Length: 324
Length: 200
Length: 70
View 1 (tube, each protein chain N blue to C red):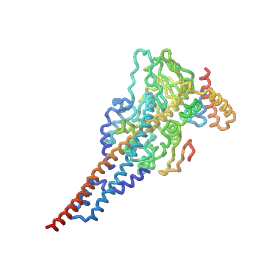
View 2: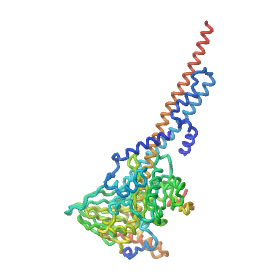
View 3: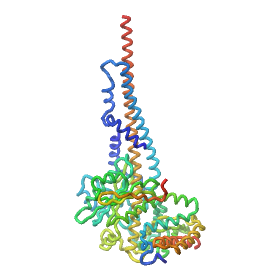
View 4: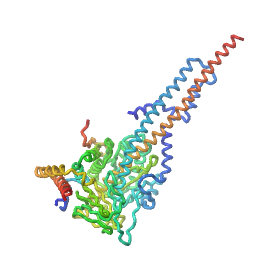
């Protein structure tokens, strides 16, 4: 609701907002510096500025509130994201990091937010996903998208809707947790065929820094093939396997588990980045609104002062005319 | 106003390689060079994204002599229970049976079953009940244990375990479909393991 | 032991490892003493909406949720 109100306010005052220096606009149109002012005109001109000040103040209130909300959400989710960072490291230690792997069926999992006003993180996810698509396309290769979040969906629908396989939204109704993300991962595994899953997300570094990141999860068949051919995963053959009867079976369990763990961390990192980005976006918005308010106040006072002065001059000169 | 916002954000992103305050260690050297090259060749305008290995804490190579301690990472989705802790021994509930891991253990991938994980550190033994997951023992005497849920034994309610055991045993008898049977079987397995953990 | 069979019984029933491990974890959470039980169960709530796409068109979305709509 707050966002809708903000958008409304924003649209109404779009013109002064994009002019490089709003104060000059007002001054040129409002301050009648040359011609004498009638009292009625003065009321109207200061009225316009007063209205503008009021709406800027309202915008500032909204952006400040959104900043506070984002800040408190950030605190909660940042701890969870940091706690989840231990989860993916063992998998990368064991199965390596293979973004350059060349396979037939690629599935790009693009993680974005459901809501906007959070800087460029959604566009970054989409941009990187598109490049991953381009990088892995070729004859007899397949690229599919699995999209998380409304914002990436809206952008990908424009040019790659043929390649969209699954869309998942409304992730953050409850606080994000492992069960939720793993059930989603399960849905992805059941609904798409893949040789490699590439998870694209924004990794949270600090409230002003988010690193676009790609995590790769291979299918058990590819893992086995790579391990046997002594490629990137050659070390995997050195491990003894305790568990089910066959190696393939353990690898299948392992890669499924890997995917849900990688996804969990990726979703959390991206959600943290979202709140961080929203917080800094709203922070600079409030600051800008404050600056604008200062300029408007100045204009307002100057206009008022100018008309009072004019009136005084009129009275004094009238009186002195009578005397003289 | 929003334009100004985006400008300050883009300024922020240019200082992305500043040392982060996060828990991860940056290790640029381990980046996949093939990937970065291919990316640069194909799309020079866009900076290649990071990959997990960039954020990996570096791990030591296999030492020539067996170290006296085993370094374990025991992680759950919602917390890192033990991280880089040096211990004498862990006993892991592998699907093939309890597996004791000492420093210098052969590199192993083990699937976990519901059971007791015990961490031995001098005379101290801490015991957790893990629901399932994986454990990797690396050749450099590092062990990673990943579980979906793990709890200290004293947080388990024995009455609920007994009740669950009888409930699921009954369900197993009445189950008709494959899925129901499997669910009931899992229930019986987990509760028997819990029961064994509490009584044993 | 059922879990030592050639193909695990849960996979023959159409489950993935993720489903299996989640079921196990949930059973363990259900056997906890209070207040740990309530805390663990309230942490792990599922809600999201999923829609499959075919030929560039979304199909009807499904809501996956373990809490009833209100």
